[in-house]
Image (tube, rainbow, N blue to C red; front, top):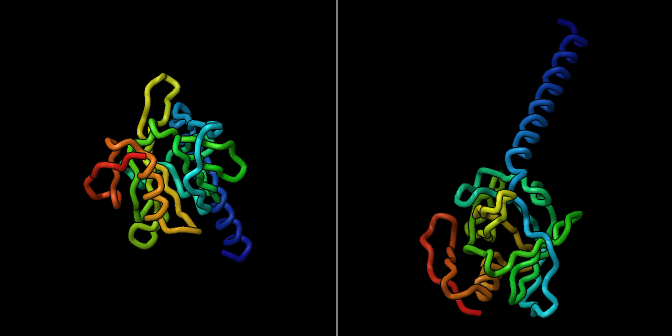
Length: 184
């Protein structure tokens, strides 16, 4: 086989792999189309507790850090501004509408080490478990992973824990047992 033939084979393989990836993402997007993120603004009366910048890593099925969900607005890694208020947590992802997770939607908060293809130092990610609405009226618990840059993951997790009702579980990492959250 000459050089041109080898080049054509490599191009054909590359195109096939790209087509397969596009097909897989489209299928995943259709599978997750029924899950919606809580887009909306922070209530006017909300008091800001802390603001942090960093990276939004992924949203996954609850307890399955390797199963990315293709929820509209949350399907891709992005820079994020996290605003913790006494009413909930706002996520401002680049190019997406603001997402506001009320304290009633938050199931638990903790620290994690891995999510999808991101592995960091122990406890370097914040795992925010929250209830997402489905188009059929039910809810599904999902985990969103954040990588703060201007403060520690422990500090951001503690700030979120401080706004939660006492019955909300928290965890130091995704494999630990839960404990009682703090009152606001």
